[in-house]
Image 1 (tube, helix red, strand yellow):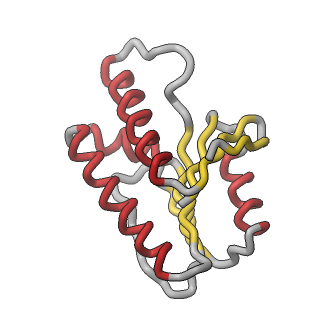
Image 2 (cartoon, helix red, strand yellow; image 1 turned 90 degrees about the vertical axis):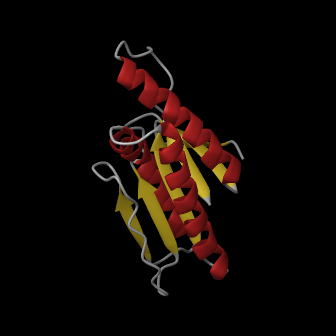
Length: 145
């Protein structure tokens, strides 16, 4: 699993798309999670990658209806399912893209602070599970792991 983070509109997805091509990943699914509450995974034999983008927004959507613990539990199960799919074939990879919303001014609104803190906590867990972690700023990557 490859976790890609960085600021909003800093070229994370463009970098990830170029990287997947450079690494030889040809057929895959891009799941846009901005307006979603669930990750819709289908295991198609032809796919060589999954790319999830907008994870921070899905976290926000879920936190409107459930606790942090429930959101973490749900995401841990989904990440495990994706990792299992990835391990089934040698040339498969899961790319998770999430905007770093934890830097800068702390939000005044209590719900936005909670969302920010929850996203940071979940991203830490994803980074710990990932084989590779890159931060993208201004379209340039810095490999952290």
